[in-house]
Length: 259
Length: 266
Image (cartoon, rainbow over the protein chains, first blue to last red):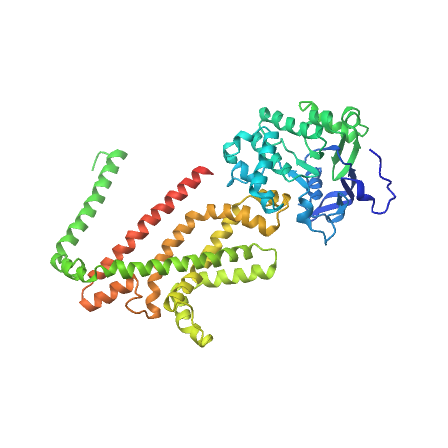
């Protein structure tokens, strides 16, 4: 992939995501203290770090679920932090998967996946259902199309949530600790779906505690602590041979929790 | 008494005394009551016959019409009020807050009086569509909207924040997400309390008499009272009361069933 000259005017044009000087405060607490980073199209970037490091907040700033206190966010060259931007239109191209799945419990699995296609993309019912079933097939749940979310396991719900996001044809997928709320035996199925998605070339930004996934699937790993990016590089470096003491301390705790 | 009583024995004696008192009171009431007179006054079949079938075909029908129109209108007013209370726009919140405080704080009777006498003075020449039916619907709606707004607000707040976030992340606007995702879930949550509200409104519809209704517009309470005056016998009031219970007890039962079902599901 050819690098974008950083001096180019409107240099965001070719990055999938570009973040410049991002700050976010909740009241008096500054959670993000100046973040600059980019994601290239097709890249899988995993964000790791201790809880409270600001990684989820950073992810939620990418589709403006959290409004940055300062700084700029570009997705596909469009500045989302521009007050005049149509944020609903921009979000159509950014899929998001939540820790708590957030499926719509009053709708069937199929309807969960079709409703935004119909109401937002104005697709016809038949087309939306076809696309929904394709995507449910992709996550291995086409046979549960008529179930309600409450009838599914957590892992199944999360895979439906992935299908729901994919049905919108996103250019970028955000994952906010997608396996953290799952029973250990259900984690694998979700990670398998995400791995396949990465292999298909989806641009992915993943906040995760799954070090195995980060090591094997990510093109880049970003380690955050205390609201800043401490280390950013290929997984062999950040996880395999971290340069920063803070990264080493974190990884020691995660990989060998009993010391 | 020399020997101390065991707790069990003491409890049994105390229970026995309570029952004895209860039975004594009942016996005294039965003995001093004038049964033939009670039967003649409250359960007088000849008088009852005069009230049928209008008790059902006119009075009950009107009560249902007043209640349902007031309820539907109150629902239509209460939901936007709830959304305003949760709005990020301060004046909306203030207006909704003010409305709820005022109309929850006023007796329903006062609201009926204001609609009946105040509205024609404030807006001369303006007539509500439907005449008395319109006035009643409006008055009941104003009362119920305040309560329903608070119920809806609780329901909307009970929908997890993640639902709105998921909908927004799919590109839905705030309004679209509210209509398609949040409100349908909130309405489900508030079905039991809204059923209770229907019971309350059913009873409040008896205040219609304040507005001065004609014989075809009477509801249960006024119908009973009018016929009681005409026949100089309170039997029709008992009939009206029984008809209220015929509706309110099953509705109340339904509300409790819905509530129990919901608790099980959560």
